[in-house]
Each structure stands twice: as C-alpha cells, then as structure tokens.
Amino acid sequence: MNFENLTVWKRSATLSANLYLYFKKLSDFGFKDQITRSGLSIPCNIAEGMTRTTNPDKHKFLGYAYSSCAELRTQIHIGAKIQYIDPKTSEHWLNETNEISAMIKGLDKAIN
Picture 1: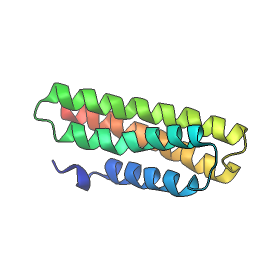
Picture 2: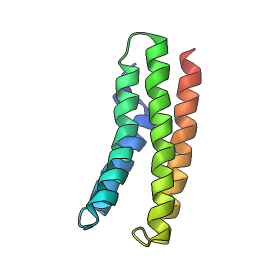
Picture 3: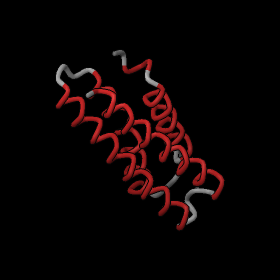
C-alpha cells in the first residue's frame, strides 16, 4: 500500500504544512518548534509504518502517529489559551486532529 495515496497521510501532511506556515513568524521558538514537530511526526510515522513489512511494525508506527496527534491537540489547546492561535483556526485544527486520529485508528484496525 502506497502511503501517499492514503487520505489520512494527505490530510496530516497538509495540517503539518499549515502549522509551519501559521507559525512561520512566531518568536517563541520553543512553542513553535514543539508544535511543528508534533504535527510533522503524524504523517512521517504513517509513512514509516505503512512501508514496514510486518504488521506489528505497522501497528507500532501508527500508534506513534496517533499519540503525536494527541500531543498536537494538547498544544493547540494551549496555543489558543495563550492567544498564539486564533479561535477559528484552533477550532478547525482540533476538528482536523480528531478526524485524523479516528482515521489512524481505522487504518490500524484494517491492517489486521
């Protein structure tokens, strides 16, 4: 299965790119680095997992992607509270991370 054809990979890669663009000029390097790294980790772990040859490896990396999505969701909540993320954007990203999480779980179940 080519990971680049997976909707979950496409959506998470787009979200990651959007995070980088949104925080491009943020001077708080620590926050910017952490939120962009967790966002980048999602499509990267999906890609790595789907190119593994054994199902246990696939499950492991999809688990990492799922956990990174939860980490990102936490950072979005905090970013909104400290006014680094506007309310409309944070709501959109929270919805997107929830949907991506569900898609990762669905993909993980489909592997069995």
